[in-house]
Length: 379
Image (cartoon, rainbow, N blue to C red; front, side, top):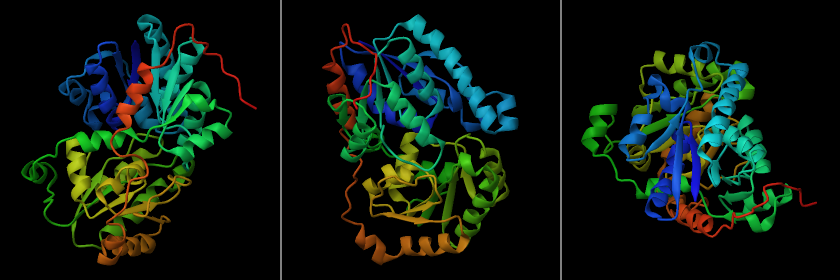
């Protein structure tokens, strides 16, 4: 079985990595890996090199984002780049003739490959459908679910949501989030390398900040980042800021990050991210990593703003508005011994590190011969 996968940025590749590693071990499975998006941009670390260094074969690559996108950085530019993904992926799928498309999450290139697969009568399996969030990502995710034939959800609540959306119950499998598998199986980076590269001593207290733009709040993106920066500057501990994704509004956030005197990095490989997440005192911002992964390491999360609205949140999450004083008070709470004692026995509701094995086992048992890709709502 030939399984086609497209990756656009570090967020989706970290989830695909453990799945790809398992496919490599299966005699009856083969992958076709397509690389695009941020992986091909120097400013974000040209992370296609990390994919290749991890011993994954790249079948094809294409550019989604050009100089014009980086200059305009708005909703129209996002739509145009997605159109480029549609054009490129339709040709790649036609040439490669995969048996199954494995798409995921809520990212533009994955949306494009899902819709292309549906139009080209190729079965599509979608990872982490049914989740709710407070930005354009939710619409993309639900749209992908309606174009997909099989679903690998993070938990039973999201499975129930897909059933309410009219998806066939027998084709929905609650398996967990594969990003947890990736973190659990990854080795840590030695503290000396972390210190040299990021100026962070992991034996001393430090925070990580990951704040992405919210596409429906573009006019506030700059002010929102300023509030976060001013809040974390109130604490005399080490800080590291990770660049946001390149959604509309990201240029404004990057401008504020670069003007601050706080350590920042364009990207982190999975080993570096595991090390920093596992040892940090608090994760700050609006990344889904705070919701999905941080509870695995009992890390307090300051979840700022609306980007993760509606997601099921573990007890380690403290949600606040984009207001400096609220963020400051939340950080104080997250650093407190009392709060950390309350979350020391927390279990991650999004998985236990075995999601990828479940996905591969299910895929191996799919009967795709003469499979009818035509969908019909169940009510």
